[in-house]
Image (cartoon, rainbow, N blue to C red):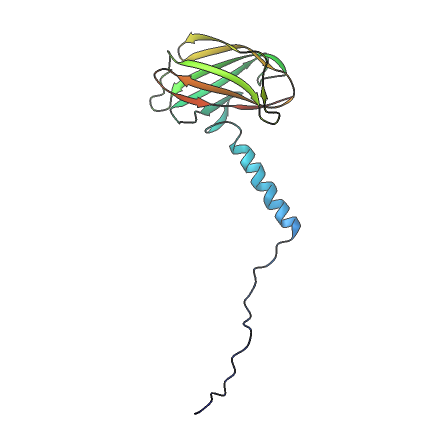
Length: 160
């Protein structure tokens, strides 16, 4: 019997991925958090349009333009919020929708003590009075839509 004289190494050196420094990981995390915060600012796609927030509903059927009084964004205290709701497929304003809004503060797990009052204004516009945001922080205006279309949206606002 003949022995092969070549030696097989006992260990094989496999290149390891280069370790990232904590600073590099922190920067990467900060970029992801900033991007994620931008994306979840409201339900669906969101953008600013002349100081008004525009969101796409969760189901994608509605394009909602949001206006606030007494300020451009909701403030601590009593607010009036107007939604202009259009079909994303036709761009037509949608009337005859049944809307319910529940202001909600996710960080604290509670809503507002006041129930907003809805007034349909026609031409796809719906006004909520008595939208009371009792404290500073992140608030969602959780809104459900029923009637000819069933959908929902929840624009988010930071209240000072």
